[in-house]
Image (cartoon, rainbow, N blue to C red; front, top):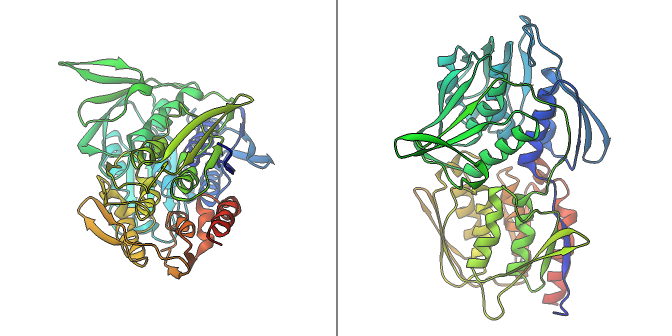
Length: 459
């Protein structure tokens, strides 16, 4: 095309980094992980796993040698004996909290999960409901169903459990990661009224297979369940999908963590809304990450998307429409809720309203993201309407030369999404720009060439 193209390296996947760290920690032996995202959230996961007996040695940026947990008092990992509870401070990492609430249920002893910021306002009752019938005790110290909580367990016996996914798929992922450590086979069903964020469960199943403890996924066909390839499952309906997990031992291994579609979404969207195409390396076209949907959403809005390979390395380039502006869309984002801030801001650059639905669970993230997005986007002059399960964004002219102060609510995605307003010639000012360190400490350095190109285009 002869166009100037901005190149950006995708950061490592946060979701897969958490899961790889857990898999390596549960293995009896030494694993080597490369491409691990180094952020506040993954540091919390490592800290909690260290309190349970694992050892992490950083040998290079993003590279760790992990000594898995030694056998516990009763012949399995995660054994802390009968002393004081293992202290699991999850900070503000909801992923750490929800995954480990399931994982430690397979241990021996007691584990105290607590956090900081809004963490004690974020629900954790579902693991208790699902696992207490198997003999695991959840003792909530303050508000029932919320951290801080002490989990007391002698391990999982096997049997049957069902997990509801209305609030988060991470509850199911935590129980799945624990299941191979049970003393007998465990059948896990999906309960409740609906299932959100299903693709993240696929990442959990991928990690289990990587570490030698695969689950068998079964879908209801007629009046019986039959095995299916989890990679082909795009959504989950309560009562129609279940998991069979046999007792097993996590195996140590060498693993490269793939790039993160969630955090790459800001750069991909920048190519769609700005005047300069953006090429992102480090993403896998066939990834199971649900947030790869950002390409489909941007394409539906009129952006151009092109995959290529350079010396065997996949790249994807996103640029704006051939002519005119992006167009508004109606999109169900229940499977990719972390993309909502990106899409909501991109919608401000489009013609016509964008309606985002099936994301009521965004109200229990680091902030009430629906309310926060509506409030902050309105500062640009665009219209916003909060729905019971979503958000409508109605574009208005984005006037260049303005300085707009945005509240971040200490929520990393409410910085990285609105940073895209830079491409409209607006100077966004954030009260806590450093909170991007929660998931993407290098965001501002990576975004700098995009911001510079936007300023040059407006000059």
